[in-house]
Length: 308
Length: 308
Image 1 (cartoon, each protein chain N blue to C red):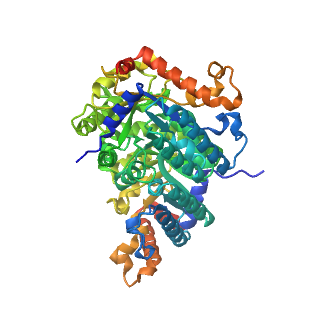
Image 2 (tube, helix red, strand yellow):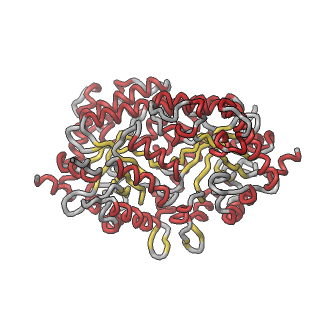
Image 3 (tube, chains in turn purple, orange):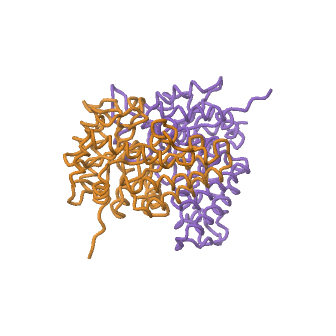
């Protein structure tokens, strides 16, 4: 009898195979697509959705050999209505067909049977993502249905702990009995991660911690030894490779570093676009993706992944 | 020149017109639909989505003359995939065509341009709901894009403050400088509500406070004088009419009380289903809706709405 590997094991294998913790965010924006798509002035949802699907499929074709995982931003597809959601399903299926893991970034959260519905839909049902981001505000019982479905389907979740925006101080940094709210949430995440680790180093429950808070990344890594950490805010939001070092374990695992716009809209970056014609935007994407991978390998414990 | 009434004004007018603060939750579940739909053993998403759309449209036809607003639960539709989302768009459009306000219950939350995408999609763009529930964990700057879009489009948002589940104690009840996290969030909500009140008693930003916490409802009503309060947890989750009294102002306004399964699946309640054949499930819905309205009128300040 064979056992399906856990999400944590599949993720570690994929990161080792591609030798990078880079996660490419798929955040399509009408006004930012390469000019060849011709939708910057269109508001017809069907045309925009079709452009999003084509664009994301072509980005996936470029990055699939290079990175372990992609992260579609659900808000971008929802903004286009039902046609956008059909495009999202198409993009998820294409990414999986290319051997990529798929993390649906929806920051979902609700109680009881409603949380079950989200978990079933995204991790088991029609969307069939490998993992989902989850918001912890409603409490640990609101996270349990996601954990249960994730464990049953060899999927994963990433719980918001400390987000990359300045306003994350408003509530996440409030201090209760000497610990911040983020640290209280991190304790809950670690407990769920340890419970689902199934003998491996990491569990089905990970955390989201922004690249904009290097010191807290160090502390939260230590507080959640069984949790993969998803680190947004690299690149455009100001986080540098050196800032995300703290998210890794000693083997160069345990962290996924996200870049979205810097890679997928690299056609708008002069240093990535040099010498390219408009229709060669995929080459700019490849350059930017390789640049990100190189910077992570140069300045973080991800370098140890290259040892083989 | 005429000015579009604000969401708060439209909501107050609708509540006064129907003389009830009852909000019917549209939470379709395959296994709970009346037997005449025949989808309890189907897993074909297209068939389930079609049943959801038909069921919700028929519920809407029953409740539209009786209540001011309906609240589709996005998770239920998402669980069915892209076909479910197309059904949701159809349900929202049908509710609006029947003169109902529509509150999209998605508990969305993200930062910067991603929050903008959610706000545009749900409050301005293709989904065209009148209001959206929002999760505050990411901080006040993550709520601002929703406030901006809501104010610009005469729409509204309801921010989670104290949810109805037992696990809401895990984080929402943590005490910082003598105030719970919920109270800190409530202070932020009140500030945004007062800022968007535009001379009226209520602003574009409301709050979600569960019916399961009567004492906190009293306190949070006092702490957020400019915020409409959406009160889930009435009925199935244990909240009684007397428990929600604290959410109202002296005029019987300021509160929306939600019931979902007790009303839409009233065919499964013997006291509502007495004497009905299977195909008469809409009569059970009407009885349950009228029963809820009657209980709220008997035991809460909503009685004052009946004064004319």
